[in-house]
Image 1 (cartoon, helix red, strand yellow):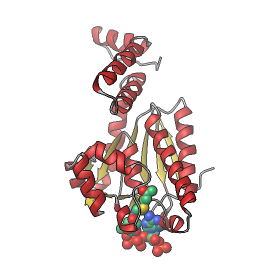
Image 2: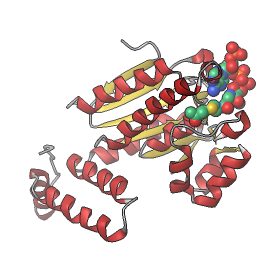
Image 3: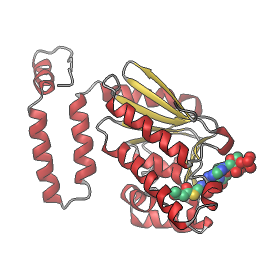
Length: 258
Ligand code: CAA
């Protein structure tokens, strides 16, 4: 039973909307747990092939819940950060592609949640930032690690030190966002990208996600070895025969996810 999330599934594509309007979708423990339950369910649902995550109202997610955190002891804070990280890891480790459709504020934990997704598409009204140092803390859901991996160390430090909030256009310039679209076109564009991905071999997409995510932090030769092993898995699938045969026979492909 979800009280702060909405889910819609249409022809294999799940759209999850975070809806906690009174706090601009800020992440408290209850919402983090709902997101974990939701992504576990989506991971295990054979009908679902791709996921779009978005927010209701003017925020994607305005951060971790400041009121909740202000009342926490260090140990309670640590537990919250562990919960947050387990959500980010779940999204990153699941083989299905997850697209963040960033509709508005993606600050602190919201920026971090978007960075755990595979692709970020933003409306031109979206805003990004890691304002934690302004609150006397540091990002606690992966921001100090995923931001430098996306935009480079120096730009990450600039954003983390200053707490500056940047608009979608700037986020695209620095590589934090893949595409910026007009407000009304956000969900349409996110769905278009999801459907393009879904037209490809689902196992292959999952293997690519694993190769990029796991390989990124390995030394190059270990990462390229991982690629060889994952390619061997791809060669063992029926999808490989289907994809290549369809090419040779100049016909549409029908992947079976096998
Ligand atoms: N936590 C809890 N409540 C939040 C919140 C947050 N992160 N962000 C907004 N809210 C609440 C506000 O307190 C306000 O509630 P009330 O109406 O009860 O006062 C309501 O949402 C609406 O917010 P505003 O009135 O502030 O809306 P605005 O349009 O004037 O400003 C905003 C929007 C610029 C996003 C502003 O709300 C803001 O700066 N929010 C905080 C952003 C932030 O610092 N996020 C980082 C949190 S720390 C973190 O995330 C740590 C981590 O890595 C784990």
